[in-house]
Image 1 (cartoon, rainbow, N blue to C red):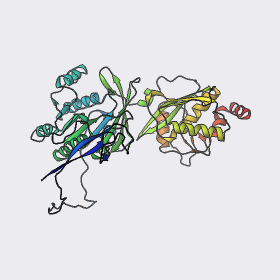
Image 2 (cartoon, rainbow, N blue to C red; image 1 turned 180 degrees about the horizontal axis):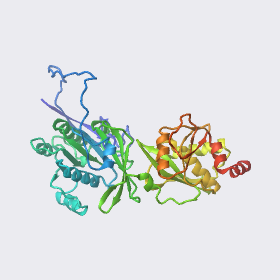
Image 3 (cartoon, rainbow, N blue to C red; image 1 turned 60 degrees about the horizontal axis):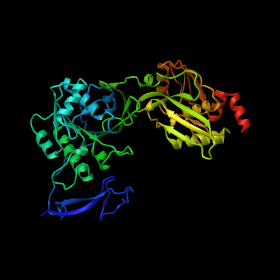
Length: 462
């Protein structure tokens, strides 16, 4: 006979506690622990039962590659690794109002036009509300089925049968619940159990399942961390409210590469694909402005050029301010320390502001050289050479190290009309490139190459 008990679960991190307390010992969050009932259906474990023998196959069994269905949205296909895979589960998360529901509504309508039957199940909006939004965006299709439901049992009973759709959207997983669990929707146990049942349905029927997830104020997906392990693909939809650009980023993908991005622009008619984001991010770039440097970066397999802006101002405080938007503040502190120690250029009495234009976030260390150049340009109030790009990693000894995919970065820069590139020294020759290459081996050579007499004068006065 099943035995019922209860335990206490943190709703922020999923940690299980034997008794209630005001603070979680795992994530140190306050007032997040709540009691949840547990039904142990196998009190004696697996003893006395006999399992079914599973089939084992060789690793080189020449199995066919999974067939893919194009979403008809090229930026989404790029992030997914080429399209949708039957039987896969995709989790897409992002801030409220960022455009997750709009993107998925555009996706199912585009799939419907190509003959794919889709079901959009909303737990947050009524059918009338979803239809009204679809009409406002001009998205109408008889291949898209709408429903408003939150019971996982009802959803599975409806979809697990003949005439099941090919693609299912669940918006959102935090609103789904199982009636055999004594817990509120959105709690750790409900999110975990509901996701498990829906993913099991997708694997069983060969459906493609989209789960929309909420995020916490720290930007992490709300609910248990195991949710990200259960699904095949995890996508983050990012963007700043003040910018019209939206970035769709893959952080996990069993059927493609990670750190791939798709770029969209939010308009009145919905999300518009941006096929050449480099040109868009540099469209409003002013010429001959100090503190501005173009960085040739990589996002997955896509080269992406963005402008890094720096401002250095005098400070009259004992602890000058450092403000960073779109980059790692710890890495900025390291670059400032290297410039001050290895070049004798003083920043300790200056306020430093750094911004990556366009609302995009840069995470790779290849931006070190561009950041250092922007800081020096702002400090000396001298603009960098027009139509030049930079990339390279800076070490603590001041040396500039080579980075990956340098040829792809240079080809993208040349395609956009840049005539010169400052990059680390490398033994690999670059063929069929007309862009001028200037090797930089250290931050000292960067200061001498770009600012010459101004750098010497500054170092002598320090």
